[in-house]
Length: 70
Image (cartoon, rainbow, N blue to C red):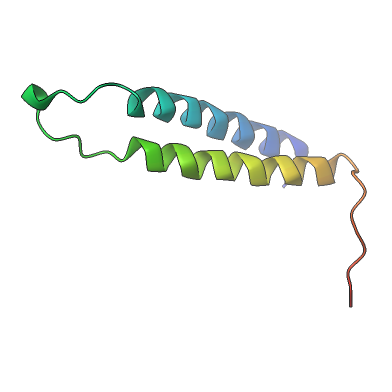
């Protein structure tokens, strides 16, 4: 992936993590029924994807990498 695609995906993952964090922190309303979307799990996965994309972004920008042991 090039730099533009990485930045776009990272921005999308961060936006999704913030949105899912907001939706997951809202109080439960039993009168509206069961909440079927696992917002906290979505927040966790999108945050993990943003972390991995951050590492990829650092590699694209030339961060030093440790030598392989083999």
